[in-house]
Length: 96
Image: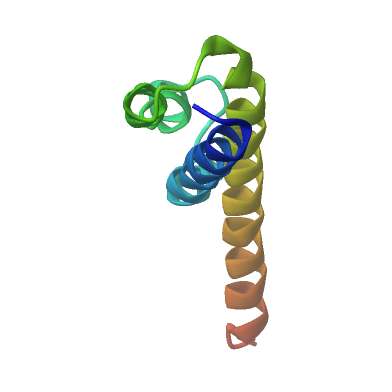
């Protein structure tokens, strides 16, 4: 593989890792830390990312970049959940 092919494949896999982790980060946010659900929401996307990395023929040296994308997806998804909760509370009618 040439350098441009490796760079494009790395970008695609990293973008996939970010995108697939968005909903899992969203779902993980309200769960209790270190619970089974929390653990599963973090680790369920890993096999798909692994298979895509292998499909593109990318080596182990690319893993830190992919992990950064996955972590970013988890963080962004979690923040989206917290923002949705804040907006829901703001729209809730005030009862007297």
